[in-house]
Length: 98
View 1: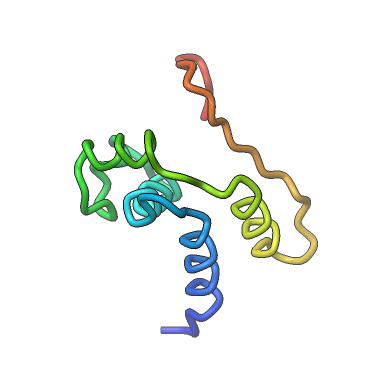
View 2: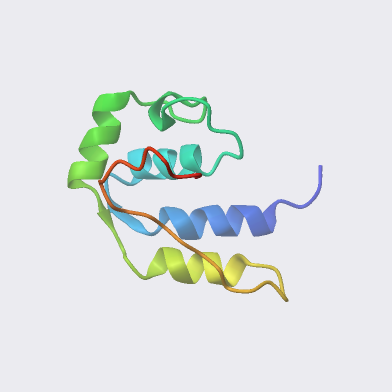
């Protein structure tokens, strides 16, 4: 297997974005980052915690608002346009394509 140092650095930088409930928040981040999401993120194989921890982490966890943006921007390949979007609203979007 190839060198995983860049991936390891990216994951460590993302983990550092979470200051309260970091393990549960990082597992949710990991789950929603999966290329194929066919079930609730808390039930994806990468998540070791159940729904209670996921909801508690979302309710009480703390995420540095600027650090995830900076981490994603620094990890993008040279030449890629900086197109990142995160929908953090709680409104249901039944007709959304993604």
